[in-house]
Length: 113
Image (cartoon, rainbow, N blue to C red):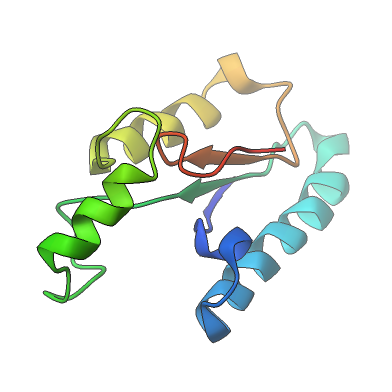
């Protein structure tokens, strides 16, 4: 099982959106514990800024984009392919011993703990 959260769950100030995404991460821990005995893994992907999506609904200014890119360690926005590749890995047998985790896919804008 792979759920999607957001960097907003860890940044605060996002109102109900950030709170809802934080709840997804907390819920995931319960799911991982409940389903682990059946060898079902449950993990979360928490993306940062992902370009080429409708998330900002046309409200992304050049200044906001530059600020978000400046926060990353790799100097680029994420892509839908970055998220798809992470889902593919987590759903594969290669990730069979990874469960109850949140993977931060944000170019280093927020380090996981």
